[in-house]
Image (cartoon, rainbow, N blue to C red):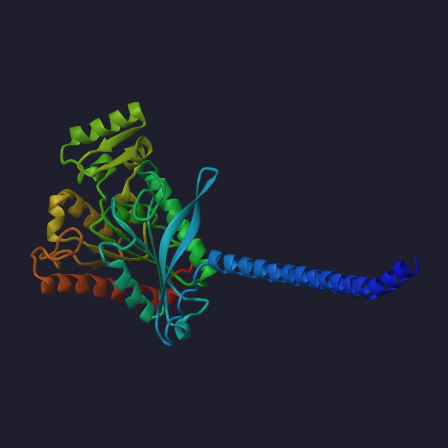
Length: 357
């Protein structure tokens, strides 16, 4: 018995040491788990921050001091009760020229075109910005970056988009001054139909302005064929324009049939520029050219008449030949003359204009 007691006395310190070591190991394990949990929480927070950073759009580079600024924007317009996105390019003057009365010009492209305006709208907008005039060029429904079907391309929708663009520039960019509109081809027809006392100045580049369905002469020079397009669209809701690789709606053709751009022009009293080119006769009739010039003259107000100054140009105001130098010369001529027109109408003569939108 005494031997067993002596043996137990020798084992007791060893047990105490083992228990102590076990306790230390458990404490170390607990600390390790806590540390790992904190590390995982930090990593989770870091992952969330990285995800949030990636979700944010990359900041646009600030323009150099004293330079105009161009940015791509998305604004909203309405199709009945549904809001849709409209993609546009905004050009703003240098910071030193931005004021609450900064004039604004909306640039409207032609049929199946886009907001680049055959390469004219960007350079023209910069010319305007250098003088203190803001500009916005937009893609109409089914054109450019628009995600809408071309069946949404109608005169009413185009007008709604232009008005949404004006509102955007007024509220988001501070362009509260006189309003100018520029339209090329079908865009010129839309601008013509919008002419009222809220528009201080308008420039029409080869507008498709013949009355009713005759305004679609660029699709077909045969009146019977144009009428057939309308009848087919009335029956089917849409009609395919195979040569243009687009489908248009009956709404577009019906609105064209009812519209009278020359009548709208004749009542307009603001500053007006009208241009036609030699290449227009491939798409527009001489009747369209003569009727548009007569409507401009019938107002009893002088207008800037550029007819006859582009005998070397196509309908899109590029050179009729293949020379890059000639092409650049045509481009600079139409862009500089139009910029000068808007500068005079919206800045130099602003006191006699209107700042409505």
